[in-house]
Image 1 (tube, rainbow, N blue to C red):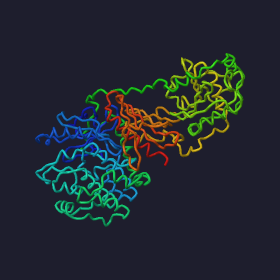
Image 2 (tube, rainbow, N blue to C red):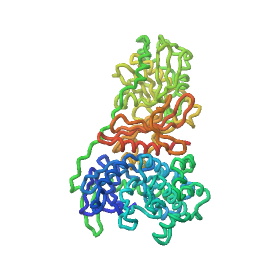
Image 3 (cartoon, one colour):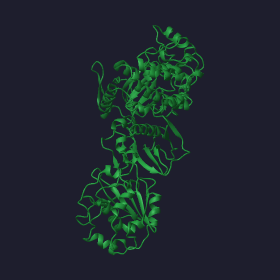
Image 4 (cartoon, rainbow, N blue to C red):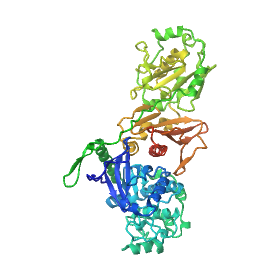
Length: 640
């Protein structure tokens, strides 16, 4: 990736985007690297001025760009903004840190078969999204395929049709792309269908696997003749790829497979391992490092060829829009429900017991870790904590024998509800649904009664519910918590201390196969989030046992949960290999969620959720595109 400096006459801003440099240029226009007001990296494509003299060009540009904004998917770089009425029309798409396929093959050689299969799955998924938006790419070629760290991305979709020219293929600027990857229909100027893109896909895969397109000849005329009339040269193609690729190159469009059929044939692309050879990943990492340095100082002086300099800060940029920090919601209805149930009569002597010297017998203080908390069988942990009868001064009207209590797993998080005769306590690890660390205070407890060597946190000001928690060293706020009615905080503290005293925390029987034990903070990182929400700190903004949040130009929260089911009426996005991403319709501006069912049992579903919140003027389409991309990366990092 080469970012060329801007010339002095170049505008420092295109629309709302500050321009960092030029990525490249071609027959239709040039591509600039920019950053938005929110810090997100974008590729800004400007149309060449001479094309605007063509009759109806601007109207066709408008139709095509508006159509392309409908495309979304994990393997495309979605258009997020455009202005067809400006003096020089432009569009902005999500910038993808990656290496173009043609350059990757040129620099490091053909891809191994397993990488070609992963490439095929990604490109087929991208074409399915493009065709689903009633578009035909028309220019699928290696230069328009980026190899990103988590898979391929298709760029420039829906743009080639703007430059179709019935006057002929040889006129300057009339063909966008390389003729070597055209379909027979294109070479013969016949009407195109989505099958044209499938033919181009086959040619791209041959080039990726062998280093040469299947119809390349010594001249343009012979190359076009070969595409229309001869069979492809597949001699160098590995046999395991021929069954996949050869049908894509059928001269008859109706005989070619659809992207969906290609995905069905491939099965799960993740079985093909790491996407690309190691040298490609090293180059992607190097690009990421350079981009961080390039965009770190918006007032940096750019040095142009010949020693000329200009300072961008001398040109007044538009006012940036501050990103408001997402506010946590109020307590959930489920918590209110069990709090109402937890109505019991407890004597004041229980409070005296907890605040006095008589603390329950505990093991030597030890530290809880997030790994222990995540993999815990919460109901078994509660039973173990209350194996000894509850003292009378604490129990009062409570059943002192644990066998009299019922224990039910929580259907939304990974907690457990303990209930007897309408009296309920709730064990949870992620009270971020209820309170944030700034909402709590350290409750004063006698020395030696700290749980697991950590102070007990609480919310003394709560009016209807009581939360008591012990944090872990990895966190500044909530960790392990017990909640109940506000009248029974002392009993919540007692249960919390007993939980912390359990010598060996019971694990879920299937912890290794469960989403519960997954660290949500490992499902994303600054490198994968850079092209989505710009640079983010190395440490996430918020960390809990089952959720992790990063703050950049938008807020990205990744969480895992257990639920009784998922919405069956919500739209889905096909990820290939039988995997689907649930795409609930966004009902709140600038907020979008995507969900993935990791596994389903006869009792519940384990769900990965990605929630993205942009700023107040973020289009829902771009927010959802960010959510889909972040979800794809997270899914790829889940255990098999």
